[in-house]
Amino acid sequence: MDKEARFKASVMTSTLDFVSRELGGPALQGILGSFDSSQIAGKKLLPSDWVLQKTYHDFLQATHRYLQSAAPPRNEEQFLFQMGKYIAQDSIAKYYKSLIRVLDTKFLLTQTPRIWGVIHTHGKIRGEPVGKTGAEIYITDFPSPSRQWCGMVIGFIHGVIELTRARDIKVEQVECVMNGAKHCHFHAEWR
Image 1 (cartoon, rainbow, N blue to C red):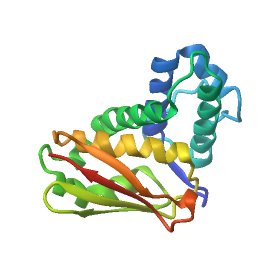
Image 2 (image 1 turned 30 degrees about the horizontal axis):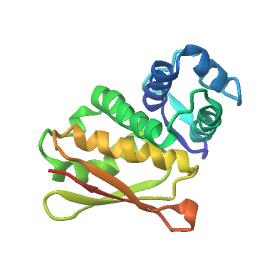
Image 3 (image 1 turned 60 degrees about the vertical axis):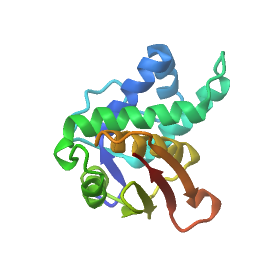
């Protein structure tokens, strides 16, 4: 495989499914038609296929433009959060469930680098427990950051924690590389 950053198509498939369900097929086709989506548009992606990270970045940017111009307007922050939750629950639950134990968020934290490594060719993630019901999560060296990606990651972290059957989950971004930080840092709490 070349040095270009890639991720598993299972994530892309879940993303496309979410956007189609939420915005409709014509909106999805409009989004795909607004950038070079030849790697993903009109193709049957297998979960084990690899997709260029740049394609995902461009897809998120095109979705951002669509949401900005949508009538009626959509709350982009909420849309990205729900997208992230859906991706976690759809792709992680389908293909990587063995890496998550129900009711064991500490085990989940030890598995975050492994989950990341199975899905991504570039970047790193590190989870540090905070007491019994919290965590600090750091993502470094991610090749295609964007505010939309970070918004989706908040929902993704929430969705993955939800898979452990934790409740009252709160996830917030503390630092972002888009603001000059050396990593994207997220704080999570649950009960």
